[in-house]
Amino acid sequence: MGAGAGRAHPIWRPIGVRAAVMVLFPAGRACYPCMRLMSEHHLTDKRFESLGLPEVLLRGVREAGFEFCTPIQAEALPLALGGQDVAGQAQTGTGKTAAFLLAAFNYLLQHPPTDRRPTQPRVLILAPTRELAVQIHKDAEALGRYAGFRLVLVFGGTGYESQRRELEAGVDVLIGTPGRTIDYFKQRIFDLEALQVMVLDEADRMFDLGFIKDIRFLLRRMPPPTERLNMLFSATLSYRVTELAYEHMNNPQFIRIEPDKRTVNKVEQVLYHTAVEEKIPLLVGLLRHMDPTRSLVFVNTKDMGERLAAWLKANGFNAAVLSGDVPQNIRLRLLADFTEGRLPILVATDVAARGLHIPDVSHVFNFDLPQNAEDYVHRIGRTARAGASGDAISFACEKFVFSLVEIEEYLGHKLPVARVTPELLPTLEAPAWRERPPRHEREHHGRERGRRGGGHGGDGRRGGGRRDERPRAERPAAPPPAGEPKRPPAPRPAPPQPEARGGNEHKAQHPQPAKAAKKPVRRLGGQKPVIG
Image (tube, rainbow, N blue to C red; front, side, top):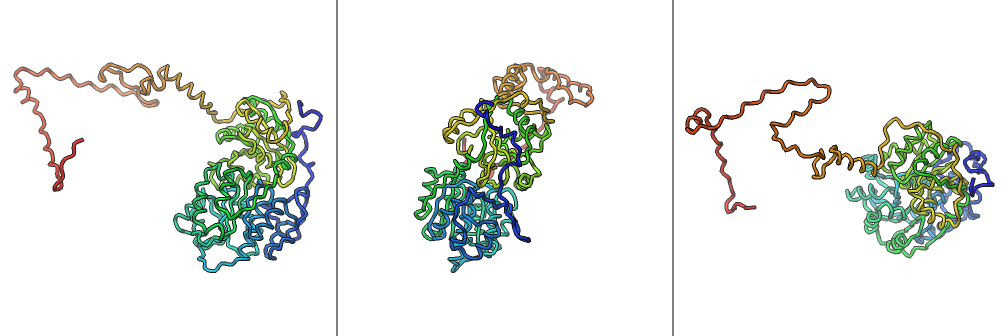
């Protein structure tokens, strides 16, 4: 097994042997699937009851099953509850959502509004993806169940009129994505003049997706930073994220929780060096040697995801693609099926899967190695949620292996390497549809067709061959469409006779039609005709 010899291979280990934490809820008490259960090793000794939260919030915390704070909650909540702006470094799954929701709800309870219209939100929470916004809304419903705030969720792709009506009916806490939020804002359905709390989640991904101009547009239309509570969370506090915090926040306190190394240490990782054409057979072979109850397969492009899902379906696996182009109602249904176990394999891109709260992911496959090390940590963190353990299997092909050095430097160690054996490369059934060749092959075939006369010629005309220099009347007629009978050729008109010398007689036999009189051009007074 190469570098991985001497220990059990992750794909051969049964899924049911992991240690787990069981939380029992009293009879009639709801268990919210969106709230993550924290393992004992992932928690601190700080209790939520020691933070001085109002009873209406503590009741929601207890019903959600929370008792002890995570590291980011233990560091950020005391500052935010005291009215201090916070910029925290924490990745998804560490409890940061509960941290900024509890801080925002507490601020609203401590600072009731004086003069405010119903369409003026008191809290604005911005998230880069629709799925993350939906899950923040679910967490807010659970934690603020007894606080009495009106929550409104807006995101693109669906429900335009229904979301607009929700906003027009009144809003206290507005949760949404930047595009749809700005759309409603520019229509003056709501304004930000009475905003009291601003939360920016996954700030680094906002830059990656090109939302930062929209974010700055909204920030400039809020009250000054000194008149509101500001919270920003990001997986990395890069220079541009730090600059944004200093520009639009009031002397923020920076909190750096390093969950990446702790998360990585709980993930059993393995690397396969393989060729591009062997990646799909290798994935199928690995899936056949395990129980894919809930596996995430990451690809770098949407096209590759669609191809991979088609091959998996053709070989007996129930798989679906989650990308940015999938309609919102289908995305939500796919996530629900995957979370509840009805869909065992989900093929996803980084943009679509960033910020998803999916519990109990058994395996993460890096079918394509990510192009930077931070995305690698975010990917494998899907299977180590809240301190749990998991398996991460990566394929290093000649196309994406260049990023392996950066990944290993970021992790601080080499990835264990496993050998590709013949039994892991089965013969596959091809999909029913004909697979489209890669772009470089399509361009090569197009050039060959042009040389043979079937494509674009060198002069830019379709057909490619030499131009037919014969007169149009002498060219052969085009063949009829397939399936239609041949029609007899129409008789050609006789060529005109040469005009006789006495041209008056010929003109009398063939009188010329009278020319239509030209309509006079009407111009307004003082206008002159324009030449050119």
